[in-house]
Amino acid sequence: MDAQELRDAYVDFFKERGHTYIRSASLIPENDPTVLFTTAGVHPLVPYLLGEKHPGGKRLVNFQKCIRTGDIEEVGDATHLTFFEMLGNWSLGDYFKKESIEFSYDLLKDVLNLKNEQLAVTAFEGEEGIPKDTETAEHWKSHGMKDNQIFFYGRKDNWWGPAGQTGPCGPDTEIFFDNGQKKCGPDCGPACRCGKYVEIWNNVFMQYNKEKDGSFVPLEQKNVDTGMGLERVLCIVNGLETVYDTSLFTGIIGKLEELSGKKYKDDMRSFRIIADHLRASTFLLGDGVVPSKMGQGYILRRLIRRASRYMSNIGIEGVNMQKVSEVIVSEYSKAYPELENNKDTIYAQITSEEEKFHKTLRKGLRRFDEMIAENGDNKELNGEAVFRLYDTFGFPIELTQELAGEKGYTVSVDDFNNRFKEHQEKSRAGSDQVFKGGLADASEQTTKLHTATHILNAALKKFVDPNIHQKGSNITAERLRFDFNLDRKVEPEELKAIEDYINDIIKADIPVVCEEIPYEEAMERHAEGVFQCKYGEVVKVYSIDGVSIELCGGPHVRSTGEIGSFKITKEESSAAGVRRIKATVG
View 1 (spheres, rainbow, N blue to C red):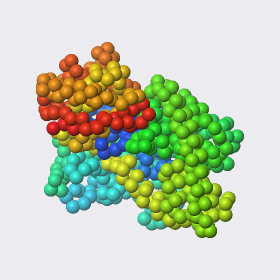
View 2 (cartoon, one colour):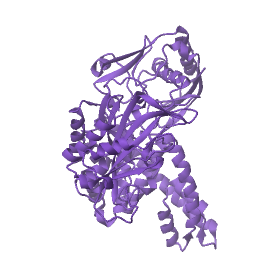
View 3 (cartoon, rainbow, N blue to C red):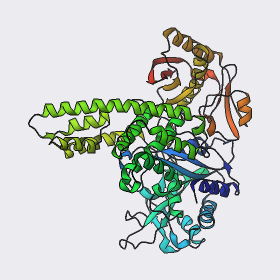
View 4 (cartoon, helix red, strand yellow):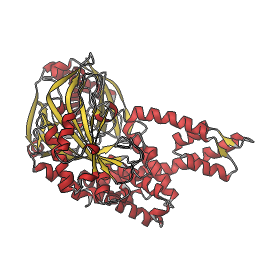
């Protein structure tokens, strides 16, 4: 089974059971300040889990592209990936545990041809105020699972949420593939790290709302959220050892072998890092991210530069990333047509960044020579200096050690590791900030700011350039941040015109109208969309008469007067060809 066959089989299975297929959302979350990237299939659906009506109905299915950045340095082993795909199905207040477990079991047995004895499952063991989830266990037993295949664990392993201090949450049941190896001990189970059990699916049952006083109240709308890692399942059903052995990577690795003249088996770690990082970079570029010094652009730059260094490791010199990216675009465009649609931008950006890094690399080598001269008779390079080479010039510790060894120097690895660990902890906290599901703040203030971004987008087109489009947005309770394409600064008089115009729209108190209409009709009405390939057959359109019409999931104010006022606080460069405006409402 190849990747597209698995995607199709999964979607078809659930469509036959009344689910509506929805396209993958962008890797860039809309109006969610809690995360840099879409980290799971549930992430774009949070408003609907909270009760908002979805145009596709109460049963949904899709495959979603995702990015997680907390373990970039771990990529290269058999399991870690930066970009991955999540297969998911959802019930928005429709079916619950019984049907969800039945669907999962039937798909594993009838579609993926896994046998009962190859599976193990978990359920929530209960705690004070929340009973043990014996209901889930009984449903599994009805499908032939034995007691020794059902494991009960606590909150750490079998509970989801809430994302913040309060909100929707509930137990989950995780499904594992038992690879048949001998148990490592009497307590060996799915929570064990010995490798016997591999998680393949997680079904979350959102049945409680955590209140401010810490109590758990049953939800009126009980939801099911499931997620299955495509790469991992593809590996299992084909009897392969690692995700890099699947059809998702064979074309990419083949191109790297061609460019390098080396075989994958000669340096698997370098091949894997390059393949993963360029796959992630191609998808990020396809969704409008550009390399920069901050946020999403910084992660993209880091991935491209790390890939470049490892390309040198396997003997690929010069500017060659586009050749690998072309393979990725070709092989993934059927599932994700935005890659083909945006390929010219992808290739231009990845080539430009690769060229920039080659220049930076030369500067880094000069800085290394300066470090050697500054060290004098001291033959050990201190961790701070070595870390600066890593942080500023993208030099991995292995490169610095190799260069140092050639000149008779050593590196204070422990000192570097301490600084690197501190950097990694900050990076994880600041880049993913992942709530398990990525629940966004949907307060009254952020709702006002969300509507304000629509009006700002329209104002920029009116007063600056009609070809302006949103390149990203970030909203907190304090301010909005809006990125847009423009190759010059916005002049002060333009900013004043924009601000005055938006405040006039607010004073006019124009209704904000939400409609659910066919996607084609929305296009005929020239509705603005950030990434047009992600939308389903029926879409939500928010319009402000005479001002703005956009495809959007919401939420928004009922009329513009609720925004109060609008003030631009800053206009600046975000990246090459991208400007940024920050603003507040009050």
